Image 1 (tube, rainbow, N blue to C red):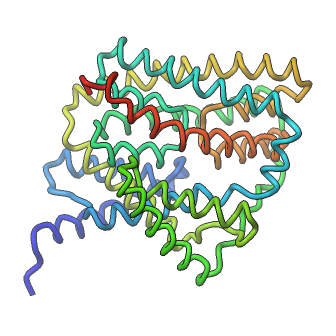
Image 2: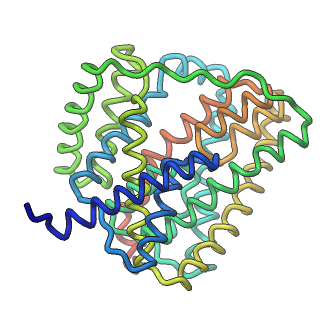
Length: 346
């Protein structure tokens, strides 16, 4: 049996991506199943290897990511929103401010086109933005670098903050049990159906948003509870990380250096602005500053939740704010990306 070139390139990509994930996991790197494959496949591409991820598999990974995003939206999160109305309003305003300040830096300071600048500026979920970037055919390499710098920098700052406050770790956070296999299967089928409908309506990242919509629907109504099991989520992130790596190899090293610098500048700017917002909210609401700082930091949900535990902060406060931020971004980003008048150059 003859293996087609496209199949050979994918098999090679899968091997390199999996090895990258295992090495990153062994070294204790942040988001190992996403960052490890991205780095490994990037190096393989720069070395001249032909690497690729099939479109069908990429689309399937988007559906799973969308379902994962919606699993954290529970009735408890909605109840928590009633306790901190001013704080929730402030975090939404902060998200918009961070988005447009970062956009201004990338678009006018570094000269990136409108779509690339807007996606790179998003102070939110890395996998969601990567999926949205791929769906809108924007500069995935540049957006991936800028977003990765943000996530990595905030992750590395965690031990520094813990050391500054001289706090000792307590028990790690408990993870939600996985969805029942039958419920998971039905959720995937429903997500595909809603995603197909969104495709007909020309929504950006339609399959991913279909997964988000269905997952939120079954969790917020109490029809189901639980997360995506590791046997499905981990390979999904390896696929996404490998996809990132295949796009990195198409960029010049000069462009990569520019993106790293842009990511660093944007990260410093959004962290300073988020800190100012956190201090203001803490003084107005009386919520302890450590909890507000973590809740307003534009980092990953999992990392910030772990940081809340280490710093003895209110995990319900932190978690509900980050869930709200991700939900708001999932609705906001497709809207700002659909503006054709401003985006003629992009």
